Length: 182
Image (cartoon, rainbow, N blue to C red; front, side):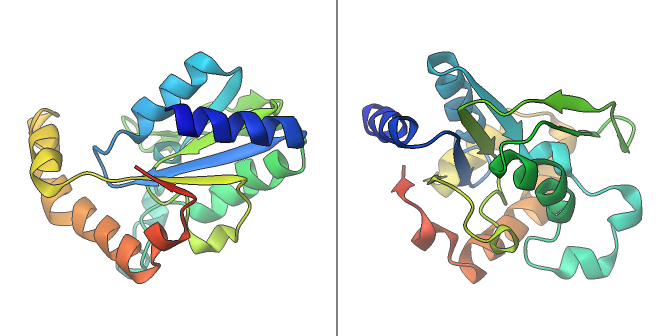
């Protein structure tokens, strides 16, 4: 944490708006790290999980795309582009219970803004981040952490989500582009 905090402090001293992206495999601690940073800094945290595909986007073609199981277009349009421009914006998080978009969340960018979640380093976004962090986890630890989650999700993690995220990391060489790997 000291190295990350030092890097963030340096960026905050040099920039009006700092955007950090935390990517990594499921159960690697992305959400936990973002929450710890939010305790230290007055910042926004945006979650890639709020950008799951809407029902009409869930096609075999889309799921065949590397990194295609997240609505990266909507994330870029609604959050990333206005955030980098320092403009106020709103976005509609995906509601997993209803498979619809929830009510808009209105945002005024803060000096520090954190984007967390797998696919946050998707090449579709270009290189808009001031700091790119990757979190790793070994397969056994990942398996044990998944087994602590609701049982109805286990099959999806092991048969769909983990293979798709592994392909994303491998095909796009995501770890090679990180500033910090933990």
